[in-house]
Image (cartoon, rainbow, N blue to C red; front, side, top):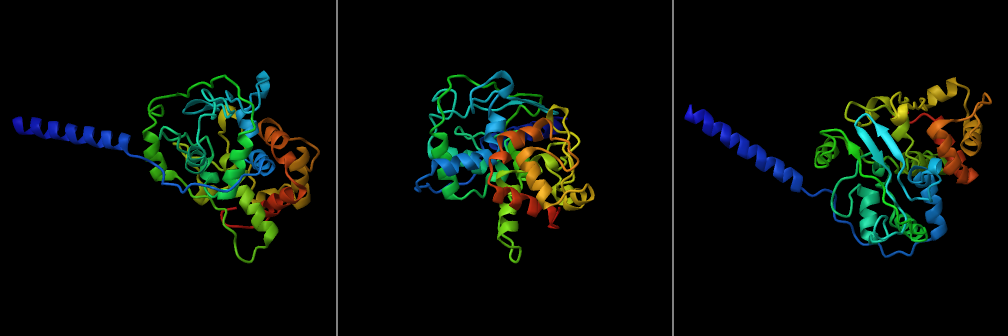
Length: 299
């Protein structure tokens, strides 16, 4: 009996030590400092393409640009978009460029905690040093708003942020933005946007029971269980073609929100167009459409 007690005690000690080690385990990789000078206009353009305005501005309540506080109800609890203004207490005004880079590329906060994957940092990991410098320069021009966002209201066990380390180890995907030989400049620009800044797969790919994308088997096949009860249709090339889309009509819809049958995008996709893709150049919208309408891996 005493032996079983000792074995149980030893097991409990090992489990406690393992848990403490996991909680203390640092995430992310050391990043080299970026010394390039950023361009505000290019950074603002990239911020639009990346959805920063739509996700971090509470338009419904007349919120200030990028002041955060937008609720995102998920099966795991409710998240609130952070304040991204230059306020030093409630926004990112007290951040260094290195902390900003780590957040964008690796999804790690200044205090070393993992961000929830509702923040599409996995798509931003391949942003170049110049793009990060441009984004940083643009965000420095945002007027400060001294208003805190709300802390996440996540259900147990998802409110334990250390658990995100396990999630990242099991499900974190590298972005697919590298150019593909033989596909041409327009197609590869579309790939860079779709698989990177625009993060289309974040909404248009179904997820498993712990919120990881089913990229290997169902990429771009639609998502019936988006936050707030919304749905995202399939946007793989076969489905788009079968529904009457082509490059021209898709590029037009990304500018106007009007579909080939005369309907309009609603919900979150309407916001994507209104605050994001409508600000892109015609060349970039055509590149996005070219990539999505063409057969490619997983699409």
